[in-house]
Image (cartoon, rainbow, N blue to C red; front, side, top):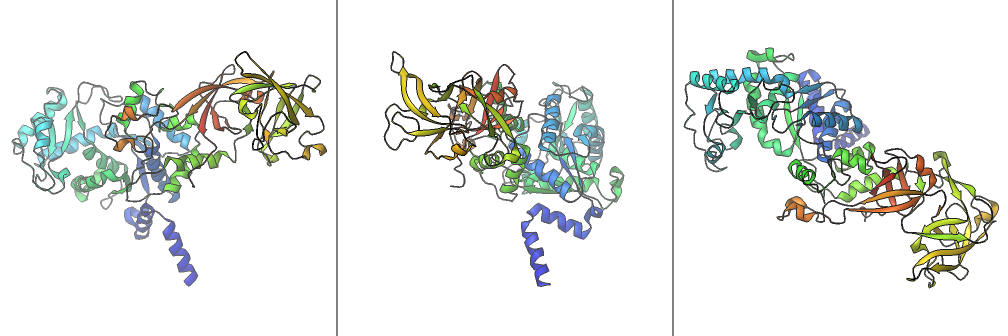
Length: 570
Protein backbone atom coordinates (compact mmCIF):
# COMPACT_ATOMS: atom_id res chain seq x y z
CA UNK A 1 0.00 0.00 0.00
CA UNK A 2 2.84 2.39 0.88
CA UNK A 3 4.47 1.77 -2.51
CA UNK A 4 1.17 2.42 -4.30
CA UNK A 5 0.69 5.69 -2.43
CA UNK A 6 4.27 6.71 -3.26
CA UNK A 7 3.71 5.99 -6.97
CA UNK A 8 0.49 8.01 -6.94
CA UNK A 9 2.31 10.91 -5.28
CA UNK A 10 5.07 10.77 -7.91
CA UNK A 11 2.49 10.71 -10.70
CA UNK A 12 0.74 13.74 -9.21
CA UNK A 13 4.05 15.59 -9.03
CA UNK A 14 4.61 14.98 -12.74
CA UNK A 15 1.30 16.63 -13.63
CA UNK A 16 1.27 20.34 -14.35
CA UNK A 17 -1.24 22.37 -12.34
CA UNK A 18 -3.77 22.49 -15.22
CA UNK A 19 -3.71 18.69 -15.44
CA UNK A 20 -4.22 18.51 -11.68
CA UNK A 21 -7.32 20.72 -12.04
CA UNK A 22 -8.66 18.53 -14.85
CA UNK A 23 -8.11 15.32 -12.89
CA UNK A 24 -9.85 16.81 -9.85
CA UNK A 25 -12.82 17.81 -12.02
CA UNK A 26 -12.99 14.33 -13.51
CA UNK A 27 -12.88 12.73 -10.06
CA UNK A 28 -15.74 14.97 -8.90
CA UNK A 29 -17.82 14.41 -12.04
CA UNK A 30 -17.84 18.10 -13.00
CA UNK A 31 -19.68 18.67 -16.30
CA UNK A 32 -20.61 14.97 -16.31
CA UNK A 33 -16.97 14.00 -16.75
CA UNK A 34 -16.67 15.62 -20.18
CA UNK A 35 -13.40 17.19 -21.31
CA UNK A 36 -13.67 19.77 -24.06
CA UNK A 37 -11.12 22.47 -24.79
CA UNK A 38 -10.68 24.95 -27.60
CA UNK A 39 -7.86 26.86 -29.25
CA UNK A 40 -9.25 30.33 -30.07
CA UNK A 41 -6.82 32.36 -32.22
CA UNK A 42 -7.78 35.70 -33.70
CA UNK A 43 -7.17 35.48 -37.47
CA UNK A 44 -5.23 38.74 -37.61
CA UNK A 45 -1.72 37.35 -38.07
CA UNK A 46 0.41 34.25 -38.21
CA UNK A 47 0.82 31.87 -35.30
CA UNK A 48 4.09 32.18 -33.39
CA UNK A 49 5.84 29.95 -30.90
CA UNK A 50 3.98 31.61 -28.03
CA UNK A 51 0.73 30.33 -29.53
CA UNK A 52 2.28 26.87 -29.79
CA UNK A 53 2.50 26.71 -26.01
CA UNK A 54 -1.26 27.25 -25.84
CA UNK A 55 -1.84 24.81 -28.70
CA UNK A 56 0.11 22.08 -26.91
CA UNK A 57 -1.88 22.72 -23.74
CA UNK A 58 -5.34 22.88 -25.37
CA UNK A 59 -4.87 19.90 -27.66
CA UNK A 60 -2.68 18.03 -25.18
CA UNK A 61 -5.33 18.10 -22.43
CA UNK A 62 -7.94 16.79 -24.86
CA UNK A 63 -5.63 14.02 -26.08
CA UNK A 64 -4.55 12.96 -22.60
CA UNK A 65 -8.06 12.76 -21.14
CA UNK A 66 -9.97 11.40 -24.16
CA UNK A 67 -11.66 14.70 -24.79
CA UNK A 68 -11.98 16.93 -27.82
CA UNK A 69 -10.29 20.19 -28.73
CA UNK A 70 -12.04 22.41 -31.23
CA UNK A 71 -10.52 25.20 -33.27
CA UNK A 72 -12.43 28.47 -32.93
CA UNK A 73 -11.48 31.64 -34.76
CA UNK A 74 -12.12 34.73 -32.66
CA UNK A 75 -13.16 36.81 -35.66
CA UNK A 76 -14.87 39.77 -33.98
CA UNK A 77 -12.72 42.56 -35.47
CA UNK A 78 -13.05 42.67 -39.28
CA UNK A 79 -10.62 45.61 -39.48
CA UNK A 80 -7.68 43.30 -38.76
CA UNK A 81 -8.80 39.84 -39.91
CA UNK A 82 -8.42 37.96 -43.17
CA UNK A 83 -9.04 34.50 -44.64
CA UNK A 84 -5.28 34.31 -45.37
CA UNK A 85 -4.67 34.08 -41.65
CA UNK A 86 -7.41 31.49 -41.19
CA UNK A 87 -5.78 29.23 -43.78
CA UNK A 88 -2.27 29.60 -42.38
CA UNK A 89 -3.45 28.93 -38.82
CA UNK A 90 -5.11 25.69 -39.92
CA UNK A 91 -2.00 24.68 -41.85
CA UNK A 92 0.35 25.41 -38.93
CA UNK A 93 -1.71 23.45 -36.41
CA UNK A 94 -1.88 20.47 -38.76
CA UNK A 95 1.88 20.66 -39.37
CA UNK A 96 2.48 20.52 -35.62
CA UNK A 97 0.61 17.22 -35.62
CA UNK A 98 -2.63 18.19 -33.87
CA UNK A 99 -6.17 17.36 -34.98
CA UNK A 100 -9.14 19.48 -34.00
CA UNK A 101 -12.64 18.13 -33.47
CA UNK A 102 -14.61 20.85 -35.27
CA UNK A 103 -13.94 24.33 -36.59
CA UNK A 104 -16.02 27.16 -35.17
CA UNK A 105 -16.01 30.93 -35.55
CA UNK A 106 -17.11 33.57 -33.08
CA UNK A 107 -19.04 34.95 -36.05
CA UNK A 108 -21.17 31.77 -35.94
CA UNK A 109 -22.73 33.29 -32.81
CA UNK A 110 -23.21 36.89 -33.90
CA UNK A 111 -27.00 36.57 -33.87
CA UNK A 112 -27.08 34.79 -30.49
CA UNK A 113 -24.72 37.35 -28.98
CA UNK A 114 -26.77 40.20 -30.39
CA UNK A 115 -29.95 38.68 -28.92
CA UNK A 116 -28.23 38.35 -25.55
CA UNK A 117 -27.18 41.99 -25.72
CA UNK A 118 -30.80 42.97 -26.41
CA UNK A 119 -31.80 40.93 -23.37
CA UNK A 120 -29.19 42.78 -21.30
CA UNK A 121 -30.64 46.11 -22.38
CA UNK A 122 -34.20 45.04 -21.60
CA UNK A 123 -33.10 43.96 -18.10
CA UNK A 124 -31.45 47.32 -17.51
CA UNK A 125 -27.97 45.76 -17.50
CA UNK A 126 -26.57 47.58 -20.56
CA UNK A 127 -26.71 51.08 -22.03
CA UNK A 128 -25.56 52.97 -25.12
CA UNK A 129 -22.76 55.44 -24.41
CA UNK A 130 -22.00 58.33 -26.78
CA UNK A 131 -18.73 59.38 -25.17
CA UNK A 132 -15.39 59.11 -26.94
CA UNK A 133 -12.98 56.29 -26.16
CA UNK A 134 -10.73 58.83 -24.43
CA UNK A 135 -13.55 60.08 -22.20
CA UNK A 136 -14.54 56.56 -21.23
CA UNK A 137 -10.93 55.71 -20.39
CA UNK A 138 -10.57 58.84 -18.24
CA UNK A 139 -13.70 57.93 -16.26
CA UNK A 140 -12.47 54.40 -15.45
CA UNK A 141 -10.66 55.63 -12.35
CA UNK A 142 -7.65 53.83 -10.87
CA UNK A 143 -7.23 50.58 -8.94
CA UNK A 144 -7.57 52.59 -5.71
CA UNK A 145 -10.09 55.23 -6.87
CA UNK A 146 -13.60 54.50 -8.18
CA UNK A 147 -14.62 55.40 -11.67
CA UNK A 148 -17.04 58.15 -12.71
CA UNK A 149 -20.42 57.14 -14.10
CA UNK A 150 -21.16 58.00 -17.71
CA UNK A 151 -23.78 60.73 -18.19
CA UNK A 152 -25.63 58.20 -20.37
CA UNK A 153 -25.62 55.43 -17.74
CA UNK A 154 -29.26 55.93 -16.70
CA UNK A 155 -30.68 56.27 -20.17
CA UNK A 156 -34.20 54.80 -20.48
CA UNK A 157 -34.34 51.18 -21.64
CA UNK A 158 -36.46 52.07 -24.68
CA UNK A 159 -33.93 54.66 -25.82
CA UNK A 160 -31.05 52.21 -25.39
CA UNK A 161 -32.91 49.63 -27.48
CA UNK A 162 -33.66 52.17 -30.21
CA UNK A 163 -30.06 53.40 -30.38
CA UNK A 164 -28.52 49.93 -30.31
CA UNK A 165 -30.78 48.78 -33.15
CA UNK A 166 -29.86 51.96 -35.06
CA UNK A 167 -26.18 51.11 -34.51
CA UNK A 168 -26.77 47.70 -36.09
CA UNK A 169 -28.67 49.17 -39.03
CA UNK A 170 -25.65 51.32 -39.87
CA UNK A 171 -27.36 54.59 -39.02
CA UNK A 172 -24.70 55.58 -36.49
CA UNK A 173 -21.20 56.57 -37.57
CA UNK A 174 -18.30 54.33 -36.54
CA UNK A 175 -16.81 55.45 -33.23
CA UNK A 176 -19.83 57.54 -32.18
CA UNK A 177 -21.48 55.01 -29.85
CA UNK A 178 -20.76 51.84 -27.91
CA UNK A 179 -22.85 49.47 -25.83
CA UNK A 180 -21.59 49.11 -22.25
CA UNK A 181 -22.54 46.63 -19.55
CA UNK A 182 -24.01 48.37 -16.50
CA UNK A 183 -22.17 46.73 -13.60
CA UNK A 184 -20.20 48.68 -10.97
CA UNK A 185 -18.06 51.77 -11.52
CA UNK A 186 -16.57 51.41 -8.03
CA UNK A 187 -15.56 47.75 -8.31
CA UNK A 188 -11.89 47.22 -7.34
CA UNK A 189 -11.55 45.06 -10.48
CA UNK A 190 -11.51 47.73 -13.16
CA UNK A 191 -12.77 45.27 -15.77
CA UNK A 192 -16.15 45.49 -13.99
CA UNK A 193 -16.41 49.23 -14.45
CA UNK A 194 -19.04 49.15 -17.16
CA UNK A 195 -17.00 47.30 -19.81
CA UNK A 196 -17.76 47.84 -23.49
CA UNK A 197 -19.80 45.00 -24.97
CA UNK A 198 -20.23 46.22 -28.58
CA UNK A 199 -18.65 48.75 -30.91
CA UNK A 200 -19.50 49.88 -34.45
CA UNK A 201 -17.28 48.79 -37.37
CA UNK A 202 -18.51 49.81 -40.82
CA UNK A 203 -15.21 50.64 -42.52
CA UNK A 204 -14.27 47.00 -43.18
CA UNK A 205 -16.48 44.12 -44.33
CA UNK A 206 -16.22 40.90 -42.32
CA UNK A 207 -14.32 38.07 -44.00
CA UNK A 208 -17.31 35.73 -43.54
CA UNK A 209 -20.43 37.83 -42.99
CA UNK A 210 -19.62 40.72 -45.31
CA UNK A 211 -21.58 43.86 -44.38
CA UNK A 212 -24.47 42.12 -42.59
CA UNK A 213 -23.27 43.26 -39.18
CA UNK A 214 -22.47 46.83 -38.24
CA UNK A 215 -21.86 46.13 -34.54
CA UNK A 216 -19.30 43.63 -33.28
CA UNK A 217 -18.91 42.12 -29.78
CA UNK A 218 -15.82 42.75 -27.68
CA UNK A 219 -13.62 39.83 -26.59
CA UNK A 220 -14.78 39.80 -22.96
CA UNK A 221 -18.41 39.51 -24.03
CA UNK A 222 -17.97 37.09 -26.94
CA UNK A 223 -15.39 34.70 -25.59
CA UNK A 224 -17.13 33.23 -22.58
CA UNK A 225 -20.45 32.98 -24.36
CA UNK A 226 -18.84 31.20 -27.32
CA UNK A 227 -17.33 28.73 -24.85
CA UNK A 228 -20.78 28.27 -23.34
CA UNK A 229 -22.54 27.72 -26.68
CA UNK A 230 -19.98 25.08 -27.70
CA UNK A 231 -19.87 23.16 -24.42
CA UNK A 232 -16.26 23.97 -23.53
CA UNK A 233 -15.41 22.59 -20.10
CA UNK A 234 -11.93 24.05 -19.62
CA UNK A 235 -11.22 27.43 -21.18
CA UNK A 236 -7.44 27.63 -20.87
CA UNK A 237 -5.84 31.05 -21.35
CA UNK A 238 -2.57 32.83 -20.65
CA UNK A 239 -2.02 34.79 -17.46
CA UNK A 240 -2.94 38.22 -18.82
CA UNK A 241 -6.56 37.02 -18.87
CA UNK A 242 -6.56 36.10 -15.18
CA UNK A 243 -7.94 39.51 -14.21
CA UNK A 244 -10.65 39.02 -16.86
CA UNK A 245 -11.84 35.77 -15.28
CA UNK A 246 -14.35 37.36 -12.84
CA UNK A 247 -15.96 39.17 -15.80
CA UNK A 248 -15.94 35.91 -17.78
CA UNK A 249 -17.83 34.28 -14.88
CA UNK A 250 -20.17 37.27 -14.51
CA UNK A 251 -21.39 37.05 -18.11
CA UNK A 252 -21.76 33.26 -17.85
CA UNK A 253 -23.85 33.80 -14.73
CA UNK A 254 -26.24 36.01 -16.67
CA UNK A 255 -26.86 33.45 -19.42
CA UNK A 256 -26.49 30.07 -17.69
CA UNK A 257 -28.66 28.29 -15.14
CA UNK A 258 -32.27 27.08 -15.40
CA UNK A 259 -33.55 30.23 -17.13
CA UNK A 260 -31.12 29.95 -20.04
CA UNK A 261 -30.17 26.28 -20.29
CA UNK A 262 -31.81 26.23 -23.72
CA UNK A 263 -28.78 28.09 -25.01
CA UNK A 264 -26.61 25.03 -24.37
CA UNK A 265 -27.30 21.34 -24.98
CA UNK A 266 -25.30 20.44 -21.86
CA UNK A 267 -27.94 21.04 -19.21
CA UNK A 268 -28.59 23.56 -16.40
CA UNK A 269 -25.57 22.50 -14.30
CA UNK A 270 -23.06 22.97 -17.09
CA UNK A 271 -20.61 25.87 -17.11
CA UNK A 272 -17.13 26.36 -18.51
CA UNK A 273 -14.19 27.22 -16.28
CA UNK A 274 -11.41 29.58 -17.28
CA UNK A 275 -7.89 28.76 -16.07
CA UNK A 276 -4.63 30.55 -16.87
CA UNK A 277 -0.96 29.63 -17.33
CA UNK A 278 2.20 31.62 -17.98
CA UNK A 279 2.97 32.98 -21.41
CA UNK A 280 6.07 32.02 -23.38
CA UNK A 281 8.77 34.69 -23.56
CA UNK A 282 12.03 33.81 -25.31
CA UNK A 283 15.28 35.75 -25.36
CA UNK A 284 16.44 37.59 -28.49
CA UNK A 285 12.97 37.80 -30.05
CA UNK A 286 9.60 39.54 -29.75
CA UNK A 287 6.17 37.94 -29.40
CA UNK A 288 4.13 41.03 -30.23
CA UNK A 289 2.00 40.60 -33.37
CA UNK A 290 2.10 44.37 -33.85
CA UNK A 291 5.90 44.43 -33.89
CA UNK A 292 6.08 41.37 -36.12
CA UNK A 293 3.70 43.05 -38.56
CA UNK A 294 5.94 46.13 -38.58
CA UNK A 295 8.97 43.97 -39.35
CA UNK A 296 7.14 42.43 -42.30
CA UNK A 297 5.57 45.62 -43.67
CA UNK A 298 8.79 47.64 -43.40
CA UNK A 299 10.81 44.93 -45.16
CA UNK A 300 13.07 44.33 -42.18
CA UNK A 301 12.45 40.61 -42.66
CA UNK A 302 11.51 38.73 -45.82
CA UNK A 303 7.96 37.94 -44.67
CA UNK A 304 6.00 36.15 -41.97
CA UNK A 305 7.87 32.94 -42.82
CA UNK A 306 11.32 34.51 -42.66
CA UNK A 307 13.44 31.90 -40.82
CA UNK A 308 14.47 34.53 -38.27
CA UNK A 309 10.86 35.08 -37.21
CA UNK A 310 9.36 33.20 -34.22
CA UNK A 311 6.30 32.32 -36.31
CA UNK A 312 5.44 28.65 -36.79
CA UNK A 313 5.97 28.96 -40.56
CA UNK A 314 9.28 30.75 -39.91
CA UNK A 315 10.45 27.99 -37.57
CA UNK A 316 9.42 25.35 -40.11
CA UNK A 317 11.37 27.16 -42.85
CA UNK A 318 14.34 27.48 -40.48
CA UNK A 319 14.33 23.68 -40.15
CA UNK A 320 12.63 23.17 -36.80
CA UNK A 321 10.60 19.97 -36.60
CA UNK A 322 7.20 19.50 -34.94
CA UNK A 323 8.71 16.92 -32.58
CA UNK A 324 11.46 19.30 -31.45
CA UNK A 325 9.00 22.15 -30.86
CA UNK A 326 6.67 19.93 -28.84
CA UNK A 327 9.62 18.56 -26.83
CA UNK A 328 10.65 22.14 -26.10
CA UNK A 329 7.17 22.86 -24.71
CA UNK A 330 7.41 19.77 -22.50
CA UNK A 331 10.77 20.97 -21.17
CA UNK A 332 9.65 24.47 -20.21
CA UNK A 333 6.38 23.31 -18.64
CA UNK A 334 3.37 25.30 -17.43
CA UNK A 335 3.24 27.42 -14.28
CA UNK A 336 1.57 30.54 -12.88
CA UNK A 337 4.84 32.49 -12.91
CA UNK A 338 5.97 34.62 -15.85
CA UNK A 339 9.59 34.27 -16.92
CA UNK A 340 12.05 34.42 -19.79
CA UNK A 341 13.20 31.25 -21.55
CA UNK A 342 16.74 31.07 -22.96
CA UNK A 343 16.59 30.69 -26.74
CA UNK A 344 19.54 28.35 -26.29
CA UNK A 345 17.13 25.73 -24.92
CA UNK A 346 15.07 25.87 -28.11
CA UNK A 347 18.25 25.50 -30.17
CA UNK A 348 19.44 22.68 -27.91
CA UNK A 349 16.15 20.84 -28.47
CA UNK A 350 16.30 20.94 -32.27
CA UNK A 351 19.98 20.04 -32.17
CA UNK A 352 19.19 16.96 -30.08
CA UNK A 353 16.40 16.03 -32.48
CA UNK A 354 18.44 16.39 -35.67
CA UNK A 355 21.63 14.75 -34.47
CA UNK A 356 19.80 11.41 -34.48
CA UNK A 357 18.21 11.79 -37.91
CA UNK A 358 19.97 14.31 -40.16
CA UNK A 359 22.35 12.73 -42.74
CA UNK A 360 25.91 14.05 -42.63
CA UNK A 361 27.31 15.57 -45.83
CA UNK A 362 30.40 17.54 -46.76
CA UNK A 363 30.11 21.20 -47.70
CA UNK A 364 33.00 23.55 -48.40
CA UNK A 365 32.25 27.20 -47.52
CA UNK A 366 35.63 28.78 -48.38
CA UNK A 367 36.97 26.48 -51.10
CA UNK A 368 40.48 26.03 -52.38
CA UNK A 369 41.38 23.39 -54.95
CA UNK A 370 43.31 20.29 -53.88
CA UNK A 371 45.10 18.33 -56.60
CA UNK A 372 46.23 14.77 -55.78
CA UNK A 373 49.21 14.52 -58.08
CA UNK A 374 49.66 10.72 -57.95
CA UNK A 375 45.98 9.84 -58.44
CA UNK A 376 45.31 8.15 -61.79
CA UNK A 377 42.06 7.43 -63.58
CA UNK A 378 38.68 9.15 -64.02
CA UNK A 379 37.62 8.89 -60.41
CA UNK A 380 35.66 6.48 -58.23
CA UNK A 381 32.65 6.24 -55.95
CA UNK A 382 33.05 6.32 -52.19
CA UNK A 383 30.20 4.84 -50.16
CA UNK A 384 29.81 6.68 -46.86
CA UNK A 385 27.41 6.18 -43.97
CA UNK A 386 24.80 8.93 -43.56
CA UNK A 387 25.58 8.99 -39.84
CA UNK A 388 28.90 7.48 -38.77
CA UNK A 389 28.45 4.30 -36.76
CA UNK A 390 24.82 3.87 -37.80
CA UNK A 391 24.72 1.77 -40.99
CA UNK A 392 21.00 1.15 -40.36
CA UNK A 393 20.38 4.81 -41.26
CA UNK A 394 21.63 4.29 -44.80
CA UNK A 395 24.56 5.33 -46.95
CA UNK A 396 25.26 7.79 -49.73
CA UNK A 397 27.64 7.87 -52.68
CA UNK A 398 30.44 10.45 -52.86
CA UNK A 399 32.34 11.02 -56.07
CA UNK A 400 36.14 11.01 -55.63
CA UNK A 401 38.78 12.11 -58.12
CA UNK A 402 42.05 13.84 -58.76
CA UNK A 403 40.76 17.35 -58.04
CA UNK A 404 38.84 18.16 -54.87
CA UNK A 405 37.58 21.22 -53.02
CA UNK A 406 38.75 21.59 -49.41
CA UNK A 407 38.36 24.37 -46.85
CA UNK A 408 40.99 27.06 -47.19
CA UNK A 409 41.51 26.98 -43.44
CA UNK A 410 42.47 23.28 -43.58
CA UNK A 411 45.82 24.13 -45.23
CA UNK A 412 48.71 26.22 -43.96
CA UNK A 413 51.87 26.66 -45.99
CA UNK A 414 53.83 27.13 -42.77
CA UNK A 415 52.45 25.56 -39.60
CA UNK A 416 53.66 24.77 -36.10
CA UNK A 417 53.25 21.44 -34.37
CA UNK A 418 49.85 22.46 -32.97
CA UNK A 419 48.29 22.54 -36.44
CA UNK A 420 47.27 18.99 -37.36
CA UNK A 421 45.68 19.55 -40.75
CA UNK A 422 47.32 19.87 -44.15
CA UNK A 423 50.78 21.39 -44.33
CA UNK A 424 53.92 20.41 -46.27
CA UNK A 425 56.35 18.35 -44.27
CA UNK A 426 55.09 14.78 -44.22
CA UNK A 427 52.09 15.13 -41.90
CA UNK A 428 49.31 12.64 -42.76
CA UNK A 429 45.67 13.76 -42.90
CA UNK A 430 42.64 11.66 -43.76
CA UNK A 431 40.07 12.84 -46.28
CA UNK A 432 36.66 12.10 -44.78
CA UNK A 433 35.52 8.50 -45.53
CA UNK A 434 38.30 8.00 -48.11
CA UNK A 435 42.12 8.19 -48.31
CA UNK A 436 45.08 9.50 -46.33
CA UNK A 437 47.00 12.28 -48.03
CA UNK A 438 50.14 14.38 -47.48
CA UNK A 439 50.52 17.96 -48.72
CA UNK A 440 53.49 18.64 -50.95
CA UNK A 441 53.11 22.33 -51.76
CA UNK A 442 50.81 25.02 -53.12
CA UNK A 443 50.36 27.54 -55.91
CA UNK A 444 49.56 31.23 -55.43
CA UNK A 445 48.19 34.09 -57.52
CA UNK A 446 49.88 37.46 -58.07
CA UNK A 447 48.50 38.75 -54.75
CA UNK A 448 49.94 35.87 -52.78
CA UNK A 449 46.61 34.10 -52.28
CA UNK A 450 46.74 30.30 -52.41
CA UNK A 451 44.82 29.00 -55.41
CA UNK A 452 45.83 25.33 -55.46
CA UNK A 453 47.12 22.86 -52.88
CA UNK A 454 49.10 19.82 -54.05
CA UNK A 455 49.19 16.49 -52.27
CA UNK A 456 49.85 12.79 -52.73
CA UNK A 457 47.64 9.97 -51.48
CA UNK A 458 48.19 6.44 -50.20
CA UNK A 459 46.04 4.17 -52.42
CA UNK A 460 46.09 1.48 -49.72
CA UNK A 461 44.59 3.70 -47.03
CA UNK A 462 40.96 3.78 -48.15
CA UNK A 463 38.46 3.89 -45.27
CA UNK A 464 36.76 0.56 -44.69
CA UNK A 465 39.62 -1.51 -46.13
CA UNK A 466 42.30 -3.43 -44.24
CA UNK A 467 44.83 -0.69 -44.85
CA UNK A 468 42.32 2.01 -43.96
CA UNK A 469 42.59 1.50 -40.23
CA UNK A 470 45.62 3.70 -39.90
CA UNK A 471 44.93 6.61 -37.57
CA UNK A 472 45.67 10.25 -38.28
CA UNK A 473 45.41 13.27 -36.00
CA UNK A 474 43.05 15.09 -38.34
CA UNK A 475 40.26 14.36 -40.82
CA UNK A 476 39.16 17.05 -43.28
CA UNK A 477 36.12 17.43 -45.48
CA UNK A 478 36.22 17.51 -49.25
CA UNK A 479 34.00 17.62 -52.32
CA UNK A 480 35.01 16.37 -55.76
CA UNK A 481 35.35 19.29 -58.18
CA UNK A 482 33.55 17.96 -61.27
CA UNK A 483 30.47 16.68 -59.44
CA UNK A 484 30.21 19.42 -56.80
CA UNK A 485 26.94 21.32 -56.53
CA UNK A 486 26.92 25.05 -55.88
CA UNK A 487 24.52 25.90 -53.05
CA UNK A 488 23.29 29.23 -51.76
CA UNK A 489 23.71 28.91 -48.00
CA UNK A 490 21.81 31.27 -45.72
CA UNK A 491 23.47 31.56 -42.33
CA UNK A 492 20.71 32.67 -39.98
CA UNK A 493 21.36 33.93 -36.48
CA UNK A 494 19.24 35.54 -33.78
CA UNK A 495 17.01 38.36 -35.01
CA UNK A 496 17.80 40.77 -32.16
CA UNK A 497 21.16 41.72 -30.70
CA UNK A 498 19.83 42.22 -27.17
CA UNK A 499 18.51 39.53 -24.86
CA UNK A 500 15.15 41.13 -24.06
CA UNK A 501 14.16 43.58 -26.80
CA UNK A 502 10.63 43.94 -25.39
CA UNK A 503 12.00 45.42 -22.17
CA UNK A 504 14.41 47.81 -23.91
CA UNK A 505 13.27 51.44 -24.05
CA UNK A 506 14.83 52.02 -27.47
CA UNK A 507 12.90 51.57 -30.71
CA UNK A 508 12.85 47.82 -31.21
CA UNK A 509 14.01 48.26 -34.82
CA UNK A 510 17.28 49.73 -33.53
CA UNK A 511 17.89 46.48 -31.64
CA UNK A 512 17.96 44.21 -34.68
CA UNK A 513 21.06 42.06 -35.11
CA UNK A 514 22.87 43.32 -38.25
CA UNK A 515 24.45 39.87 -38.64
CA UNK A 516 21.22 37.88 -38.38
CA UNK A 517 21.66 36.76 -42.01
CA UNK A 518 24.78 36.12 -44.05
CA UNK A 519 24.66 34.47 -47.46
CA UNK A 520 27.54 32.44 -48.88
CA UNK A 521 28.00 30.10 -51.81
CA UNK A 522 29.28 26.66 -50.87
CA UNK A 523 30.45 23.57 -52.76
CA UNK A 524 28.40 20.59 -51.60
CA UNK A 525 28.26 16.89 -52.36
CA UNK A 526 26.55 15.77 -55.54
CA UNK A 527 24.00 13.80 -53.50
CA UNK A 528 22.36 17.07 -52.51
CA UNK A 529 21.35 17.73 -56.10
CA UNK A 530 18.37 15.44 -55.44
CA UNK A 531 17.48 17.01 -52.07
CA UNK A 532 13.85 18.00 -51.63
CA UNK A 533 12.23 20.88 -49.78
CA UNK A 534 12.43 20.43 -45.99
CA UNK A 535 15.13 17.74 -46.19
CA UNK A 536 17.47 18.10 -43.22
CA UNK A 537 21.27 17.68 -43.23
CA UNK A 538 24.23 18.19 -40.99
CA UNK A 539 26.89 19.95 -43.04
CA UNK A 540 29.98 18.54 -41.37
CA UNK A 541 31.74 21.04 -39.08
CA UNK A 542 29.22 23.72 -40.09
CA UNK A 543 25.84 23.02 -38.50
CA UNK A 544 22.37 21.70 -39.22
CA UNK A 545 20.65 22.87 -42.39
CA UNK A 546 17.37 22.43 -44.23
CA UNK A 547 16.44 22.79 -47.90
CA UNK A 548 14.58 26.09 -48.30
CA UNK A 549 11.11 26.37 -49.83
CA UNK A 550 12.48 28.48 -52.71
CA UNK A 551 15.09 25.90 -53.63
CA UNK A 552 15.00 24.53 -57.19
CA UNK A 553 16.87 21.66 -58.89
CA UNK A 554 19.07 24.16 -60.68
CA UNK A 555 19.50 26.41 -57.62
CA UNK A 556 19.92 24.69 -54.26
CA UNK A 557 19.21 26.87 -51.20
CA UNK A 558 20.09 25.72 -47.68
CA UNK A 559 19.02 27.47 -44.46
CA UNK A 560 21.04 27.06 -41.29
CA UNK A 561 18.80 25.74 -38.53
CA UNK A 562 21.44 25.94 -35.81
CA UNK A 563 25.17 25.64 -35.33
CA UNK A 564 26.86 22.51 -34.01
CA UNK A 565 28.05 24.24 -30.86
CA UNK A 566 25.67 23.85 -27.93
CA UNK A 567 26.27 26.29 -25.07
CA UNK A 568 22.92 25.79 -23.37
CA UNK A 569 23.90 23.04 -20.93
CA UNK A 570 27.01 24.98 -19.97
